[in-house]
Length: 154
View (cartoon, one colour):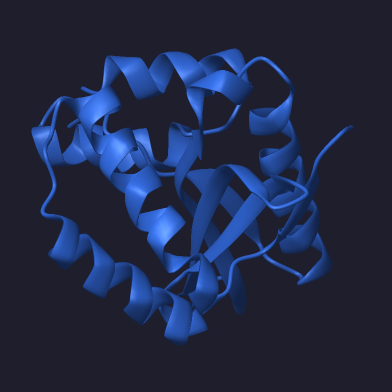
């Protein structure tokens, strides 16, 4: 592996903002407001309870990000980890970065005693679904809830 993974810091905010804007446009054809995204990213980076970003980098070059949030599971008396998004810059794709980010988070979740790790992705987002399916990233838990909300699984 010719890159490393580390937790993001507030100094990484501008890169994360740019990645989030690119990811939304690419995967959902959605144009985000940069200032709103910046405020959200800065809040998240300032308060780990709001979410955590991890970055794949080669030297000073940031190649990708993954964001997780934690939810308390009363039933399991443990944290449940949700992967909110994963993004790798187009020039660095097909270098194993997506898989490495997922593997890193999976190991962190297991080490923290999490009772589960799931991917949060909209079932209608075919572009994101294809990426995650190619990586064998689990998303069934979210889809079950989504189907119930849509009335498809009653």
